[in-house]
Image (tube, rainbow, N blue to C red; front, side, top):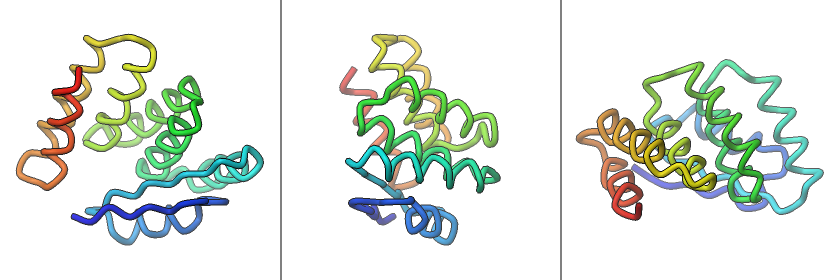
Length: 131
């Protein structure tokens, strides 16, 4: 599977469209501008039907060092789709930011279980190994 980076994601619309059209791809959206990140948040709230949109939002928030917001977005992604391996992996990364290694381990293990046999499984195993 491909990893697609949307650098300077702005509103996040491109990242969301790619995630929707190519669910097997990992989409990373990064944004340094706080106002642009706020617009991206608003867009996700307007298109809340898909857990991937919340996972992308959480990833961008985590990269912007907004761990509490990232955790809330990851929780929303899991609420929408508890079978989303990427959301479980991201939740593990959020939990590590708060020092919850046991919770992170459980999240990474669930992500690995859900991603078994896919290219993402290796990535999730690497995250688990870094604990």
